[in-house]
Length: 130
Image (cartoon, rainbow, N blue to C red; front, side, top):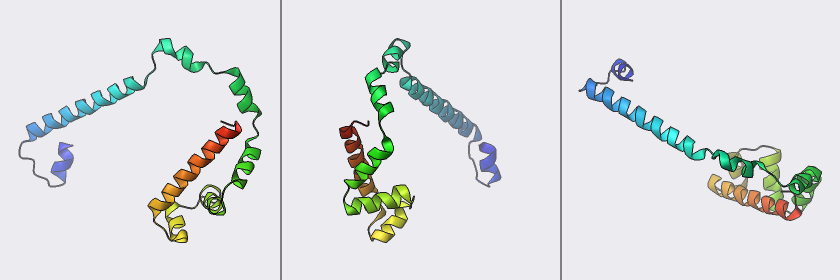
């Protein structure tokens, strides 16, 4: 890091302090990363509870015809929602391009997409596919 800065022409008034600060920042970041990773780990005594899944749930998920469910759900959407669904999820159109087509901001498109996804998720759970 110090060598890169010196090569780029930057002047380091106190190289020793710079190196100590860089090393300190590195160690601090490393400790934070390890602490985050440790918080994400599940204690071994709880692993069995997480791993066990209701057999009825697995059967229901296995027996669900997701293509048919998707067709049914898409039919329940409004024309605007169907068009948005088609543009984004079928044709894979970029959000910015959709915004230009609909003459609205990309943020508005993102919000509509978020609401559409939430609506579809609710309908999937209502139909028992989730």
